[in-house]
Image (cartoon, rainbow, N blue to C red):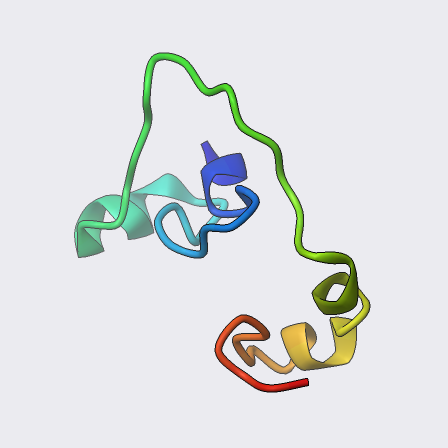
Length: 62
């Protein structure tokens, strides 16, 4: 279920590894099937320090 959060080109839903947090805040999603890929664009993938600082690397200029 958490892989939805890491889906390529998408940054929403299923934020926590403990699903009840997402259920509480209405961000839980659990489809029957999932046929997508995970990851970031290569230049964003290398911005690990920004990600660890909880910065949205999709919204920020590089």
